[in-house]
Image 1 (tube, rainbow, N blue to C red):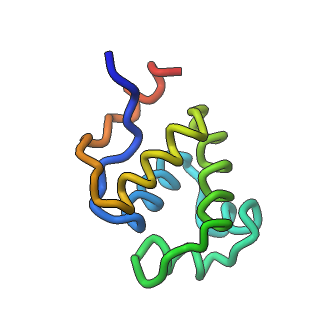
Image 2 (cartoon, one colour):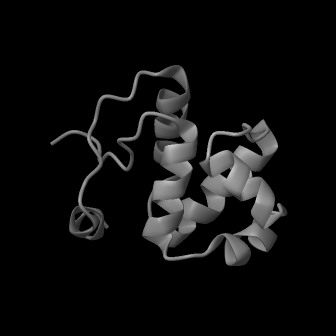
Length: 100
């Protein structure tokens, strides 16, 4: 079986929103963990602006920890979304649970 896929969206904003929702964390709760404002997170999720590399790395670390997945896999898949090369559909939540 190939590597697990955590993403399936068409934009970075969609990916971040999907991942945050899968963690069950609100923007207000996530913001201080990644040293951002809830408004900045909303702008990223709505594709109004793009996070800096530092902000994206912080988001990746926190989300990966919450989803109990490999940071490097999540980072690579976020890069694929940014590059427009992500082809994998998003798995159901129970598939993520089984991959742990």
